[in-house]
Image (cartoon, rainbow, N blue to C red; front, side, top):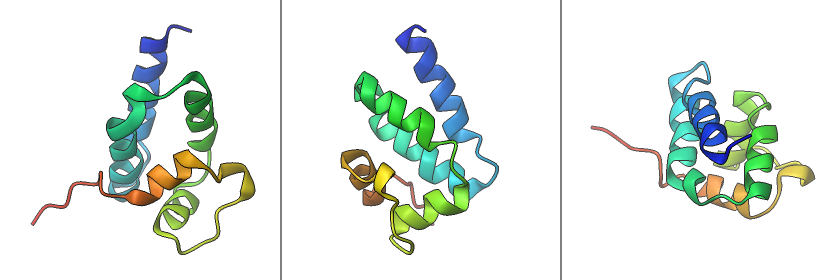
Length: 88
């Protein structure tokens, strides 16, 4: 599949998670990093977003241990969370 089409699909799936909190976390992560991902990063993310939102959020916030299969640089970037806009 063409890279641009894959990125568009991933962007949509990232921003349509089911809850606003998950949309901000996963969608914000995609917007901050997605354009620079390698093929391996895109495969990681495509598989990762199949996980439950509550698990993704717990791993990102550090309140649950990250399973070994998700550990690495992508998870480290996700856990940074500075990409989530905070409005007042």
